Length: 278
Image (cartoon, rainbow, N blue to C red; front, top):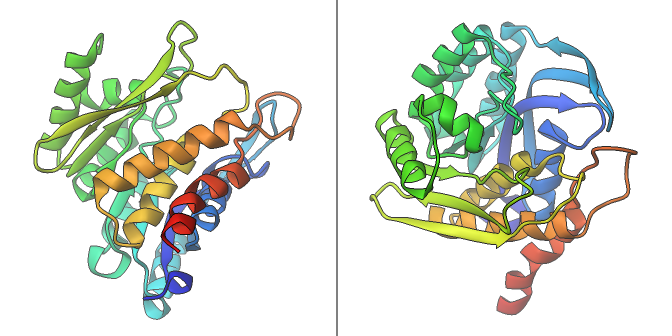
């Protein structure tokens, strides 16, 4: 498959301001040179200040999107984002097929980086039971990792224990992202636990900024794009870490409060290796 024909899929919600959810995923796919497909699960009305309304897609409509994509396209990898309720969790689990849609990156959008729950208890339990075992890679933030493992995480040893717990829940590879809102730390440290039991850390300097919208979406989307290209998980997550750091370090002046990261900067970072190998 040529670079121009590589395809990836996001199963996610749409943010009207373009900074997060499916728009961020598609920006990231494009930045990494991959054609993006999207299965819409929900839509939110919002801007850089706040979100004021949400509309959830009917489960029948989500199932039909799966069906139509499966009929026509060769998709190299997929990712999940916002799965807003029980019905959506179940329809995604029922319709996702790794033979058709490739390896799955699960971005568990269940709790914000500030600790607020996004799923009710029933949907959370279905997510834990049905979506995590499908994950080739799962990418929880610090708070999501605590919730999914029902642990209190205080140090690096706890992070590794939590990642091993997520392995036991069925995720093949685990990336626990550092709490990038913690202004007391000098670095953001992410733990990567691979399917074979090996683990390593990825660290970048902490950048204090309000322009972080779409960070987690972009990170998981670039991993997805890299897997679609055939890259191994360890290399894919490192590429994603480097690109997202660059996107945060070169912010866009879009919106008046909590703005987006810069996918054009990520595109430049991701293009360095391609240019080097050309």
